[in-house]
Image 1 (cartoon, rainbow, N blue to C red):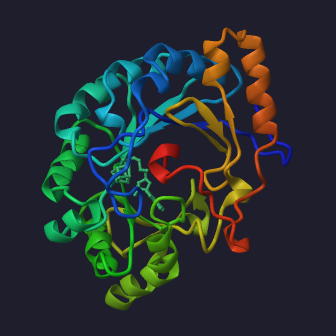
Image 2: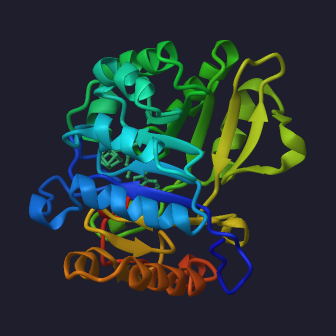
Length: 326
Ligand code: SAM
Ligand code: SF4
């Protein structure tokens, strides 16, 4: 078991497969983003070696992310390798869904359990504006493909930005009336790259909930208000799905955070919103023994920051979101 100094059992690892993406969402990265050369990224065998190490320390839940994980070459084989690793109980993925029409079934066959798909609006023009060129219909096809492949329950992630999609939250929430999906609204967080938008155009979870309740009346609380991962869940009376609010900025869930992140260049980051990182790939390539790496990982986990510092104005600036892995 890997425990930090505050007693949190760290058992959930998000692995970024690439910092590249086939979109450029305005809240995630600048349009002229430069990406790392492939040689700097973890190679397939290095991902599997590190996954085995983490699994031997008690990590049992993996989420693949990026950048856009589905554009990584050999993504299906990587999923299979991780799913077959002893000790790993679940493998899921966060994706923009564009390539799921083709990949959902092979990924499910390789052992992927579930997907979270990002969709910030159902309006084709607004979607294009937020993502800089995306086609929302391709995401909708991806959601259908994920359901057909059994990558369920499908969760949909939406970041709400003033001036872009703040008027679309009711339409998104209404998807849960007839679909057994979880539509989750994520508060926009500040990182490098798009900091100005993030600081001035953030919409709070409370404002989003207010809009939905103004249209539909009070939402029903799910699970007695207990957090589901990082989301507080609600539902419409008679709705098939749930509506989640991830209030990372206004109501942080740091006390119950059990996760770590491995960036695509093989760096262990214990808090999304803190700059502190420990490089694992360089020592792995330099021939460090598995025992030495295990010790390094355990020490880094032990030092996991208590929580983020947004309230005190501390913003992580060493990486944009897509370089960390959301
Ligand atoms: N490309 C995939 C996708 O979009 O789902 C996976 C990577 S993306 C960085 C993971 C999640 O982070 C997405 O749901 C995205 O909306 C969210 N995200 C990106 N930038 C964010 C920000 N500044 N604040 C909050 N969430 C953000
Ligand atoms: Fe790409 Fe996901 Fe970032 Fe959008 S949020 S630019 S889809 S990594």
